Amino acid sequence: MNSMSIKKSPRGSVLAYGLVIMFMVSIIMTSIITFIASQTKYALQVHAGEQAFQIAESGIHFYRWYLAHQVEGRTAQQVADFWATGSPYGVGTPYAAVYYDPGGGAVGTYSLLVTPPASGSTIITVQATGATYRYPDAKRIITVRLRRPSWSESAVLANDVMRFGAGTEVFGKIHSNNGIRFDGVAHNIVTSSLSQYNDPDHSGGDEFAVHTHVTPPDPLPPAAVPARPTVFEVGRSFPEVTVDFNGVLGDLSTMKAAAQAGTDNSRYFANLTSDVGRRIILRTDGTFDTCQVASASLTGATPTHDIATSAGYRRTSGVNTCNSCSGQCLQNYQIPNNGVIFVEDNLWLEGQVNSKKVTVVAADLVGGSAPSVYIPNDILYTNYVSTNPDIIGIIGQANVSIPRTSDTNLRIDAALLAQQGRVGRANYGTSDIRNSITVYGAIATNQRYGFAWTNGSQNWGYITRNLYYDNNLLYYPPPYFPTGTQYEMDLWQEE
Image (cartoon, rainbow, N blue to C red; front, side, top):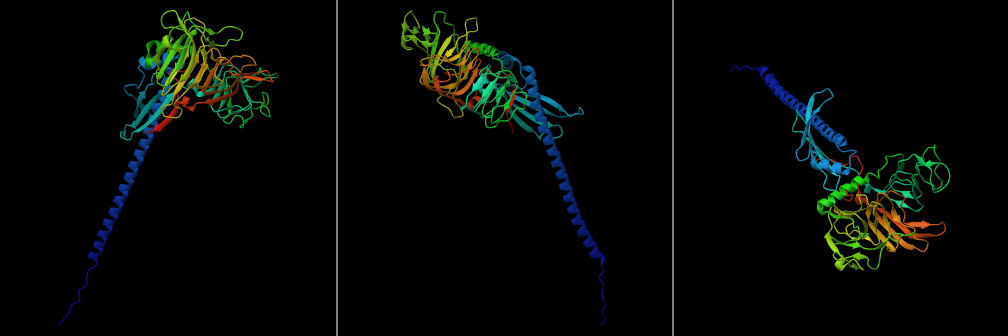
């Protein structure tokens, strides 16, 4: 039987191998192309997101520019009117604008939604949403908080020369329109509106506007200003912008208008032509007692600023008087929250609040003599550390004074402001010795403040003086308290 050998052709195998290789290459190429395309698309989206972020930020910058042209330099009432009736951009209805690149091409849009300040506040929030035309869904949202810095943001704010002795420790900012000698420890910045001044507390040449005599004493100008971190932990700066105490009159006018209108349950008390002022006692039940002061020691070489112990108060009806602020001489009202108690007369103030933010004012804006606030007894908070801390602002058009018969250990929880005079205590002589005074809040004073006196060998008044800055005042200033003229950003976040 013959056998035949059969030879297989390699063409079929090569073709099969070729098809397999081509299939594998096509899969790889397709994957590569898909990957490159997806990466390109992702890069474009990332770029669009970054553009949207920058567009949103440009919206924030625009709104700060807009506010600078609308409200800076205006009175408190004019600013309040702007937010109430000036149709500000972005309030109620979002404000939209086109964003252009440097070449003039339209890239995208931003939209601004603005929350205006609450009554008595300066804080606003601006939400900016940015997007490009090419990728409108790649939005970026930024929210910022803007505020006009309140006068309560400084532990001490003054219009006069100031001196802080050895052992003084201050945790808040300090500023004076005049010079400052600081010999203690400042945990925040100390500033002055001057470059140098002649310190009236001693002889010698001009010194730096903010200087210290802690060993070794600062050199005199024009020498370089040394750092002195053991005294000025955050530093010192001068000259800085002057704070306008005269401008506070505009804020007082706004407070009076709010009180007369009853805004936020604010309360207005007119001038008592036949009496010397009012006494107010704040209570933790959310109310305050008030009595008309019929007689007080307000004149003489060393005025005591005390309410007379007899016939001290006027009855609410009739002509008789009371020896105490009670009974037929007393009236009771609700303490306004985020509002004002405006007294157009001298005011004696004391008591305690619970879950309240209120400003109490003694001012006469119709031509009478400037009244003062007198604090004989403690003024206290109930809530110090919480999401809703108690806040009290106390403003005297003349002074915020401590009477002679004040508590031996006196505590004042409040931001104090003396618009024309000073925060302090009169010189009642060497026999007048009190133990301690604690101010937990802030002090703004036109004239040099002080609660003690010395003749070099003996001290009197309050021997121990504790000044603690209340950090809550940074974000919760007293209602209607005076502010700076520019909006500053204090919170930035991306949603």
